[in-house]
Each structure stands twice: as C-alpha cells, then as structure tokens.
Image (cartoon, rainbow, N blue to C red; front, side, top):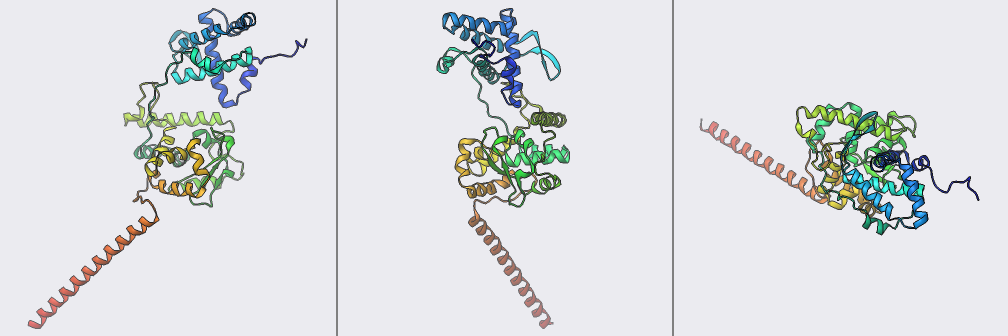
Length: 380
C-alpha cells in the first residue's frame, strides 16, 4: 500500500489550484462552510467532511451530502448576528448572501467535496436535489453622458483617462488594469487596443478602441511608458490589488458626487448594491453600441463572446461599426450622427446648396438696392 501518497487534495492545495483572482471567493466559501458546520453540527468543516466520506464508503449513498448542501443554502439565506466574520481587516456579523453569491458558494463547495472528499456528483441530480434561490433579473443602470462628465470633472487626470478609456472601450476594470504598452496600436485610427486572451474573462482575445476625444490623453500616457511590457494603468502587477484600489477610489468620487446629487448613492432593492459603480461605464458602452447599431453589436463591443465571433471574422466591419458608435460614446464633443458615408455626403450637399441660394439672394438684394440708389441720383 502507498499510504504515504495522498489520494485527495488538502484544503490549502485546493485553494492554491485556483488563480489568485478566484482565491478570495474560494476562501470566503470555505469560511462560510466552517461557520455553518460549527453552528449546525458543533464540529469543524473537516470533521463533517470526513464523517460524510466514511458514511459514503459504507453505504455508497450520497443523500446525506445533498441534505447538507440544502442546509448550507438555507444557512446562507439568513442573517447570523451571533457569527462574526472578518472582511478586509474588519470584523462584522454574518449577513445573508445574495442568491447569485449563494449559487457561487454552492458551486465552489461542490468542487471542494469532489477534490478533497473524492465525491462524484451527477450534475442533473445535483440540480434537482439542491434548492437554490432564484436570482432576480434586474437590468443594471448605465451611467449617462452627463454623469460620466461629472465623474471625469472631479477626477484626477490619471483617473479621468481611465474612465474615458473604459467608457470608450467597454473593457472590464481588470482588463484595463492588465493592459501593457505592447497591447496598444497608436498608429491606427481609431487607436486599437489588443486584449490578449490571458487577460480577458472569456479567455478569448479581442480588439477594442478609444474615441478621438480620448485619444490625445491616452496617447500621452502610453508614449511616456518606456518598456513595452510596462503596465499602462495598473498600479501593481498584482492585478487584484489594482482592481481593489480603483474600486476604492471610485467609491470616494461617488460619495463626493452624492453630496450634491443623491442619484449617485442610490442602491438596488434586490441586493443593496450601489447603482453607480465602476462597472456602470461598461454598461454605458453596451447601451451606446446598441443605440448606434443594434443589440448584438452592443454585446460584441464589450466582449460578450456569442456576439463577438461574427465581428472578429471581419475586422473591417468591426472598425466601421465602432466609427458609427463613436459619436454616441463621446461626452464632451457633440456632432450629427449619420448612418453612412453616402448620407453624410448628401447632408453636406444640402448645406452647400443652401449657402449658394442664400448668397445669390443676398447678391440680388444688393444689386436691386444699387439700382434704386442710382435711379434716385438721376432724378436729382
């Protein structure tokens, strides 16, 4: 027997198998599971898992695991003021979790039971046996042009550039913080940003752009970076730390704006989260893309993979549609939006013809006045 080789992962092995950006939710899941086991059974989480493993070896039945998961879901859906948890160096009572958070915790706990308890779940049966709360559907509110101007006007120059790039490109804040100088094509018009698959949430590379109102300030920052591998906006190569830093700075701006405009500090009823957050800039990009072209383009512009594929295959179409969207993305410049080059030419022709008519009329009026004055002089 090779008893000196483990046939399952330890808790730390399980946590470390995830990318750093996901380890936070994994640790939060295991912490809540530990609190649940202590509250429900009076034992720690490892003891409960081990007892379930032993029971399964004897009965070859995992019904008790399903029962535990249902109790865990119920636990997450209730406040537990007697349980103190630590979050970002602060202690606070355990609060009930949003349905989407509950769903993520249950998924993570399933992975934990599979890797550390060697359980094998039938996903169809798992879905039917565990009663997850329904996730409420509520459309996120994008920021308006006026609100983005308010935000940019109180931000420092560096933060203003970040917000301008985010509202132009539809990038996630993590993608923006991961950008390097080598990812940007300054010679293209509009300026192209090439997002490598390694930094996107979908793990698929894509191209996005910035508008001409953002281009000068963005170009100055990119040119100032000497190393092609240098981060453009990220304050640290620990991207999660950079994201947290930007979210905290946005919170300060939001609180400041909320003193004069209460809309900035409004919250959603279903999860008590702020309606205005740094991700609202991404929603703005999608909304403007939909208004300029159609809904599929709005989703493609912010990197939703299902709609993005049809545009990636034709780069020229992607650029053309962005140029149609560009005027709607700009917050400081205003112009007439035309559907295509032919209609733009037709509009210019009409303007020229109107100016010609006005000039001819003014000339005729001038000549008629001269003739009148000449006649008066001859009479005298």
